[in-house]
Length: 162
Image 1 (cartoon, rainbow, N blue to C red):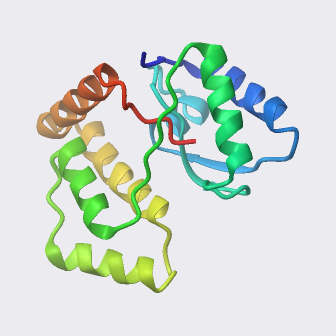
Image 2: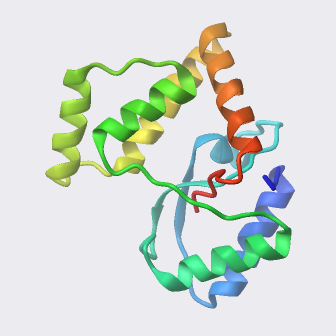
């Protein structure tokens, strides 16, 4: 079941995660979650997108805490992350209909390989680029995004990117 969270529900879930972890967790939230929490976007989201975390995403305690909170909230908690330039380019196309050139994809991969950029930063760049189009009411980008979110919400494998 895809949980839909508004601002107050996101804050509650983050507080519950903090309590469950019993340690300090510093995160950098991006995507629509950031817009909902910090900029007044008035819609719900099925996930909380995290670009950086003080606890490595692979940490078992973090995963256990996420699953525990998600279970308490009645949601599935499946995560995904993109580690390759190709994966990020595919995300841009599937989510927003944005075609990324092979050259740009190669530059992204070299930056990831050389540790000069984290994949989350590239995803945030794609999301920001798309948000500019959506803000200008570019119907193609908006429609791709709506379709992507509808498909994801119907799937049991929706993301919970925290």
